[in-house]
Image (cartoon, rainbow, N blue to C red; front, top):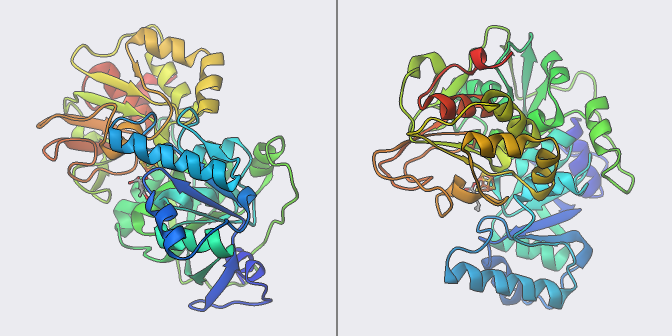
Length: 417
Ligand SMILES: CC(C)[C@H](C(=O)O)[C@@H](O)C(=O)O
Ligand code: SF4
């Protein structure tokens, strides 16, 4: 069996599972975000009175942090009241940040767990060897009542990463290349595992970016075998014990692909699809009115660090807005302590409080008609960050910061020493 299958088998109380089988699994942690008030409505409609275990539920007020409309304010009020009433103490209010980063920061995610959140990017947590997946309101309400949810055991695809990452090339470039090559629907309901020597060159932050964007190829979940890098990250964060599962030798993947990253150039996903991926060199010189650094894909300390490195002692281009959103409060504090915030503010960045912000096009940095934005986030379809006639390029945090400096798309490598 694969490690993912062993996680599902254990959660289902079984010794063995096979691809395609439907299993009813015990969920270790269930998360709801502020776009999903319907979850609470469904909970009551389905006859729910008390949640199965208030300690295993977490509520995130992150997509509208803080609320930007009266409706959002009303919804968030109902979330808070639900949490207080049900004794849910993991209420991550508008000061905390994006759910996926908050889960990691607070040690709520660990290898071998089943984690279900009302958010498609829950695949991020494959970076820790967890089974993480996103669901809708009624599925989450089912967990709130029963503590369980059914899954179809997915086909598992292996993506083997060989070679050595060149300067100015990051996990973001790798995953863009993978999606551009295999297509945005390649992994629908499949699990995607990353293997190979490149993983040793990737921090937990980079691994999270890699797993996060498997969602953009339709993946149900993703996986990286926990190693010493994972364990060092988890050491002072996770309190309880956990089990690390290993794939049996000789396990047959549904498909295997190898990518050699040694000659990889920085990549961009050009408008208006995440699999419209090209070498950044094809777009050099394209003016950008906004550069956006943040989100559960590209708003971690390492991302702010590379931006600070590029912009130290320099100024953001006068015709470009540089919007920076730390992914979480912990990221914000660490980046502040390390001086990155000071550097970026002095360079002319506009800071937004931790949360999803303009990533999903509702507030805090929307695009006007005809504008071009380069973003470290994960989606670029029309209207995603504002006007449907705005153009969105997805790139690495370094590519975003270098574009903020020059007011146009450039190859970030030459700005790094
Ligand atoms: C709010 C949620 C439904 C959505 C998702 O699941 O991905 C959002 O986070 C996004 O990125 O579009
Ligand atoms: S930061 Fe963007 S991609 Fe991530 S959960 Fe929020 S809206 Fe979705």
